[in-house]
Amino acid sequence: MKIKILGSILVLFNLLSCNHTSIDYVGVYEGKLPCDGCDEVETKLTLKEDEAYMLYEIYKSSNGNEIKRITGNFEWTDTQDVLVIQQVESLPIYFKIEENRVIQLNPQGKSYSNEQDYILTKIEE
Image (cartoon, rainbow, N blue to C red):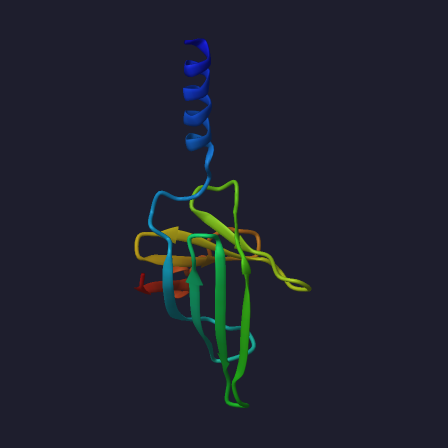
């Protein structure tokens, strides 16, 4: 009896301590994000249930476009509903998960003051 109760408590603790969202985050998100060194960044982010991602970005500029594509596995942060993509030789990219959208956060994992400019909208499951 004590073992069953202890087992139930451990399962409940694990469920409550999971720091990822209860929102369905799996899917494809698109949007145009601001860019310091270009006009805008056309962005497409794919998130999978196994915590794999694909980030496809087109940096639009009058001097021509630069395309960047990175893939790998994202991690959940200690902050509820926030994931991070670690990049080699570059700052991490943070995204806050919300219903049918993700919001890119700054390199410290905080919201930009103009948060509305950093939204990617879910386009498919």
